[in-house]
Image (cartoon, rainbow, N blue to C red):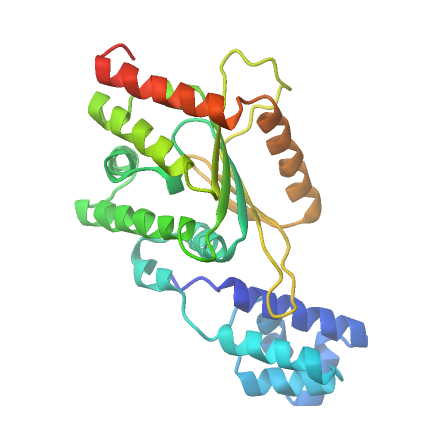
Length: 292
């Protein structure tokens, strides 16, 4: 697959479209004034192709953008030329998942709901390997491809550390703590690592008890990503859905709002952070003692 566009490139396309629409020009009209093909401008606005800084400068001059904002957009255009780290894994990235990894890398906040497994960003290597290797039951995948996907998953987890670390808030169904993946030793290790990760100031894990009296929301795994403004340009929320047969990245306001409400309802029915850590620690003890 081609490398997925970065959020910077997507931000740039969204902002260039906004500036064009503010001017009142159509894609065909603006392209004609610059002696471009309409498809070139359309692909730039939809982040389907990269764009030279000189081309962005032409657009900004045509759109009569003030010097202050022009500087911000040009800085964004320069940043958008940089390739993301995930490009080296393009051999094992599907289209939609590649898009999600690019988005996740630049998000400010992730709100996730996990129904069957520990969220990918919180999985340790042994647990993740068992999950990724199990995919070979239904799809042709070599041991090398599994190892590449495993390394990709471990690399993704770097977003949780550092100066601009992602804030991750996860609601985990209690069944995740009880479902055997990789055996008792793997489960115990994963539960202990989950407690350790939840001690990070930017990681919040809440267990949704099986007996919780909650709203009847029975959703598949989903993650809602939020983004901080950058280079004076905003970016809309994104929802990622991952099922057995479908991966989807959704960005319209109505859909993201629906998933936000769903996540908030699930979170309100969950245990507090302290209670959740006690429940996860208890699960680790049970796996270690052979009682799980």
